[in-house]
Length: 73
Image 1 (cartoon, one colour):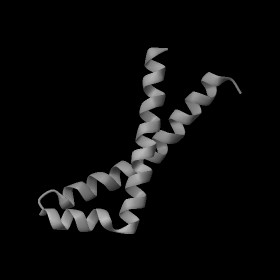
Image 2 (cartoon, one colour):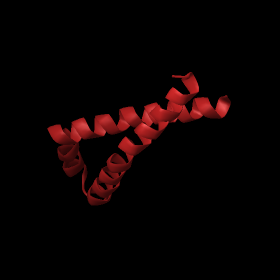
Image 3 (cartoon, helix red, strand yellow):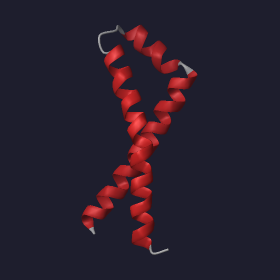
Image 4 (cartoon, helix red, strand yellow):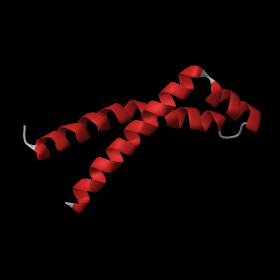
């Protein structure tokens, strides 16, 4: 497989993975927006939230790096 084809596939796959994660993040961000500090800390210390948020951040950086490298090429 050609390198540019691989980059294109990785970009498309990571964007598909990011879609539900973005929806999850936006819904949860709206729900904790007006909460106090302790409620936000409780939200982010839950095991499931930490895992999903970590996956979201990793895929966001991966997608960002891929798209920025395409822009510079």
